[in-house]
Amino acid sequence: MLAKKSRLKKNKEFDQVFKEGKSAYGKLLGIKIKKNQLNINRFGVLLSTKVSKLAVVRNLYKRRIKEIIGQDNFQLKSGYDCVIIVMPAILNSNYQDIKTEIKNIFSKLKFYS
Image 1 (tube, one colour):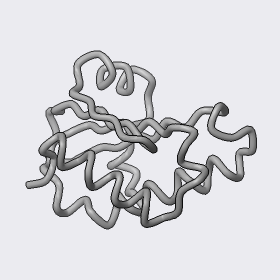
Image 2 (image 1 turned 60 degrees about the vertical axis):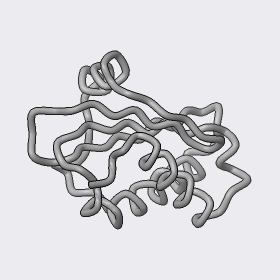
Image 3 (image 1 turned 30 degrees about the vertical axis):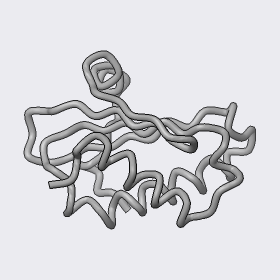
């Protein structure tokens, strides 16, 4: 679980990451990162109704992604805003697939310290 201070909440914060951030995409996820002026990382998860019409399913995948990030947050460089974009292909994957996809994309972006 991510702490409240580690979450992106406002549309303005998401828009800044989309405009100025570096991005990398996989089959299940896309990740955009941008340096911020803080000493902490902040994360946001975008999951549209195109992935699933059911809020229960969308919330399940949001919780899984936030849990994976919470476990790996100490290994990441600090001072970044990160937006994770979820693709519809995630419905056919399990927890381990999502975890390896996130690690692969973070390593592509050189986000590990």
